[in-house]
Image (cartoon, rainbow, N blue to C red):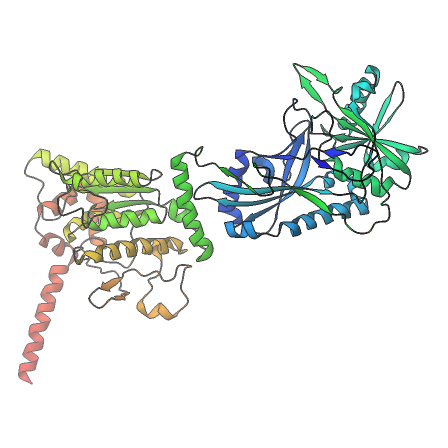
Amino acid sequence: MAAATGDPGLSKLQFAPFSSALDVGFWHELTQKKLNEYRLDEAPKDIKGYYYNGDSAGLPARLTLEFSAFDMSAPTPARCCPAVGTLYNTNTLESFKTADKKLLLEQAANEIWESIKSGAALENPVLLNKFLLLTFADLKKYHFYYWFCYPALCLPESLPLIQGPVGLDQRFSLKQIESLECAYDNLCQTEGVTALPYFLIKYDENTVLVSLLKHYSDFFQGQRMKITIGVYDPCNLAQYPGWPLRNFLVLAAHRWSSSFQSVEVLCFRDRTMQGARDIAHSIIFEVKLPEMAFSPDCPKAVGWEKNQKGGMGPRMVNLSECMDPKRLAESSVDLNLKLMCWRLVPTLDLDKVVSVKCLLLGAGTLGCNVARTLMGWGVRHITFVDNAKISYSNPVRQPLYEFEDCLVGGKPKALAAADRLQKIFPGVNARGFNMSIPMPGHPVNFSSVTLEQARRDVEQLEQLIESHDVIFLLMDTRESRWLPAVIAASKRKSTRDRTLDQQCTVSRPGLAMIAGALAVELMVSVLQHPEGGYAIASSSDDRMNEPPTSLGLVPHQIRGFLSRFDNVLPVSLAFDKCTACSSKVLDQYEREGFNFLAKVFNSSHSFLEDLTGLTLLHQETQAAEIWDMSDDETI
């Protein structure tokens, strides 16, 4: 309780302080605001709470903040009074601890004092009910530190009790109580609200009249010595008023002490139990008003809430136990990405990255490293295709597998990789397809069974490429990459001006991690470019120019030389005789479908070279070399 000091001859008025009641929904909404809107912004934010005067005996006077606290236009719950507040959300625990609480309280107190002096509080009494909330949200652990403050101005003199407090039913007759209920309800209805924080009262033996604060001059005209006011009181203690009365009594002393010697206070408590309304437990008392009509300075203020131990200090709520672990993991992953975005690349469009669907053709050394880097970028949809099983040599280079995966012949790589991604991060949508990819020069016509299986494999691969946004060709050989390159080019899933890579993917152990990471980083850069997969190629010569995206250059190829730790960014036009993406190959594939593919599978390598004109190009090149030699000999 907070007590007034002064005249030893009279009892001192004490007040029941607010107890903060911050709903779980409030913390959830703060988390979303921090992640998506506030980010690193520590500027004060307007929020809103409310309090209620109909609680049963024994409950504390609560100021409640719910999920709607951040919407200043949200309606106040029925039969509750609003309280306007300011949120100070800090980025670090250290900032939370070192925040100047005295200064924050003084600033809020000055705002209340100015509204009293200017008369704004008479027009809008909600201005008397300000509060502060200082917070730090540890979003990785879901620990929320907070310190609540309800600023209350202190009068320069004590407020001696002249009479009471007593129950309303000891001062008012049943007829007066019924008249008060009716008058209060009518005023609320007129104002379009369900509760009034403060109101004026006049009464005689039969009738009770109420009015708004702003009409006090007319309402109390001709009245002397004493006035009566009503306060919507969240406290249910029989001998003490609640905290909202404090600032109102400062207003009364400043505005009316020169005209009235005392003020009678009705702490209005409106409880409904078992369908019966009761205000008889409201309390009424009279206090002497001190002289402060001409005081220019803001009074001293108090109001920081005590912690659970009764000392002056903050509180902490731990919501990690009541959060779903999968949702907690997702939020933590998102937080890491957004912290990177806020601090390094504020213009980065993370939604494009997180929502992209990636198909990884190959679940070996490159596939495992690409998948881990994709998850680091928050990609939620990853699909593996592979027909191999995990061998004893794999786990040391392929981080999604363990020794136990090699036993009993080894688990299928694609299925094991997808399962491991789910264990690492349950929020990822990972799938694995244990299937073969038909290759040129590998016949499939030995039997109708193998031919039909090849047809099914081709159809499934076509469906997978169609349903994904980005295709990673992570297989070991050029032949295994041919069919997906053709399908991807036909479905416009590949970038322009690129030829089929002819280099092997197996090299020094560290190269796969570097190559996998570069491939994913290149994908993210492409996604940030306005042209997407059709972005103009950046080359090594562009390194000193203005980069085309917030992440920098967007090369079409990255050639690395680990022996000298060097990278180059080559650029070339599309080869019109490419055996995978040239127009002749694509035309045949789109016109004949599987029949064309079967010819490729069952023919020698020269079939594609003859089709695209590579054979003729080789012959012409050889002829030119012979002709040059003849010229040299004749000179």
